[in-house]
Structures are given as structure tokens and as C-alpha cells.
Image 1: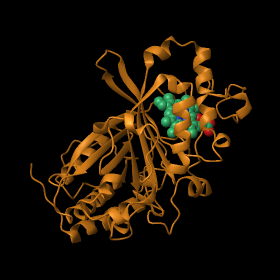
Image 2: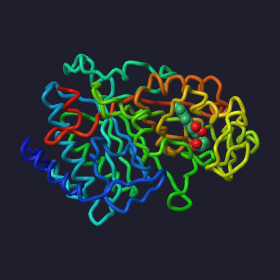
Image 3: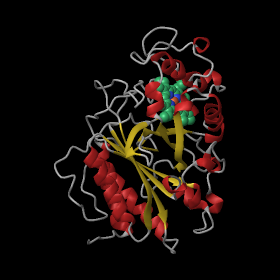
Image 4: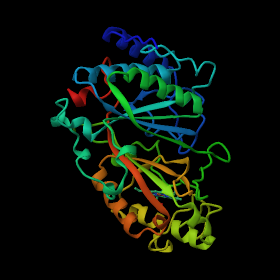
Length: 384
Ligand code: HEM
């Protein structure tokens, strides 16, 4: 396959042109709305898209390991990816590699690409050790039992969109641009379906999932819970925590409705709290069973801490023992994973009734840099 690498000048010209294309569009607002009516700006308000952006219908997480011996290939790849992200999200043809064509005629509205860095990028191979963001240092609970081949990685791209093939195309272009520098380590696909636009999707246990989250339009809440404060090395960025969580459907399906609802702490049909009311009714902590999932995740049980969840369902066929291999590609964003995610996760793994039906099989923690400054690539400020 013929590939053309852009010169730095061409790549940056592409960034500028794409940024203009994106500039004409508007950023989506609203909690769980999908099906954007306009392209999402890839770099808006100094942030990468795909974080506060409402969930689209499809997700692909693709992690890459660098195998180049040449340190200068790292910024080169990130420059190419930056130009690609702008082109893909702005609706223009990718300029970094030859377009492979499968997106032609498809609606790419709402596509987002988010790039993150794993802790291994900051090992001794490329001289970035001193630049490692503080949040990557802390191990997260349960890590030792995870499959390393399905998690971790030097680089992560989170691609989300409302059309499965458009998402595939974006990952395809990013993979081609990485050829000779980085190879794919693992991939996880996910999906969400809604009964109506704006409705809360259901997870594969049949419960509404994504009801309680910081409001993406509430800048103060995002500044407090999601964005790393400006002035710190990753300032304006965030951390992405990923867990591939298998749902043990055979056991769950045998559990009575009441048992399921007490494990979650919400009604299955309506999504409302067990104490009464619809899905948006406030959850009274005292009315939620002590070991219920929502109680253990609630800010009042976590010192006011909140996380921004962007989880997707996955269906990977069957396990070797013939059980369905389906569950949740759990993704959340937090400004300080050690303070926000680690204690909550530890308690859930220990006490959560819902976790009796769950197995964490893989995962990762990634630093997500802010949007690049004009003429720079994603992560340039952090890595230089
Ligand atoms: C397969 C795995 C999981 C399933 C099926 C699941 C399911 C749910 C459901 C049904 C809700 C209630 C509806 C809602 O508020 O969206 C919920 C809420 C929540 N979950 Fe999970 N969850 C999973 C994994 C996790 C993990 C690993 C974490 C934390 C690291 C987490 C943190 C939370 C939080 C913070 C809430 C909101 C609690 C509140 O403030 O009411 N969940 N989850």
C-alpha cells in the first residue's frame, strides 16, 4: 500500500486548514445526547474532543506500542496523528496517508478522536521519563489480575462516532499513519443503543447506565473533577481510566429482579432510585442498600469525588468455557485517578454486590494531553 508522509510544513498546514473547517462547527452540549448535527471540533476550548463530548453510538479503543529505535519518530507520529484527527473530525479527506475509501459517502458527523499516553511511553526508551505525568504513577486496584495483552500500551486512541464504519475508517487511517513506528497492541469495540435520542442507554445487565455524571456544560464541575489544573505538566488535560469488565450473564440472568435492583441500587425498568421517583430523581444515600453499586459510587460516599463516565457495552462472542464474553468497556475521565478512581474502585472490588457478577479482565490508565497549541502536535508541550 502506498503511503505518503507529510513534511512538517504540510502537516501543520493541514492542521490549520482542518482547524478552520472544525471552527465552522459547533460543539455539542447536553448530557447523553448522541447524533450530532454538526461535526465536533477536535480541539475546542483547549481540550481534546471525546471527553466531555456526549457519548456517540460506537467506540473503538486502540492501543499502540512504539517499536521505532528513533526518538524523533515519536513527535513525527504525533504530528501526523494531529493532522489526521483534524481532518477526520472536520470532515475533510485525511492528508497524512492515502485515504482508504471506506468512509466515502458516509456521515462522519460527531466523530471524535482522543489521544492518550500510557505510563510505558515514559520508560527509559525515548527519554521522556522526566516528563511522566504524576497521575500515571499510581497503580489502580486489581491491576495484577488483568490480562496485559489486552491493556496498557504506549499510546491510546479513543475513537467514537455514530457510524461503525466511520469509526473503523478513522482507526484504519491512524493505524496506517503509525506503520513502521508503532504497532497495535490491543483493540476493544463498544456500542450503545438508545430508545430515543437523548435517552439513557441500557447496559447488558438491562439497567440504564450513565444517569449520574458531571454535566458536560458545567465548566466548574469539569474543572473540579475532570481537568488537570493549568500550570501542572498535564494542565488542561485529564486521565482516562479503562477497564474491560466481563459481565457474568449466566449468574446475573438467574438472579431475581429484586436481587439485581438491590445490587445496582436502582429500579431496572425506570432507572429510578429504590427510594422512589424516576431516573432523574435524586438518590437518597440512606435509601440505597449499603453494598449497592450506586451507593459505593456516590459522591457522598467518596468525599465529594466524582468521575466522568463514558462506558460502552461490548460483545466479544464466547469465552473458552462457552459463556458469553460480553460486558462493559468502562471508560472514565478524572483529574486525579489516585484520589478519585482508586479508592472508589477498591471499595467496589471489595464490597459491591454488583461486582459479584463482574470480572475485570483488562485495563489501562492514560494521560490525555490538552488540545495542541497552534502549530503544535498533541502532547508537544508535555513531551518537550
Ligand atoms: C460492568 C461494570 C459496571 C456496570 C454494569 C455498572 C453499572 C452502573 C449502573 C447501572 C449505574 C447506575 C446508573 C447511573 O447512574 O448511570 C452506575 C453508576 C455508577 N457507576 Fe457503575 N458500573 C460498572 C462499573 C463501574 C466502575 C468500574 C466504576 C468505578 C470505577 C463505576 C462507577 C460508577 C459511578 C461513580 C456511578 C454513579 C453513582 C452515583 O453517583 O449515583 N461503575 N453504574
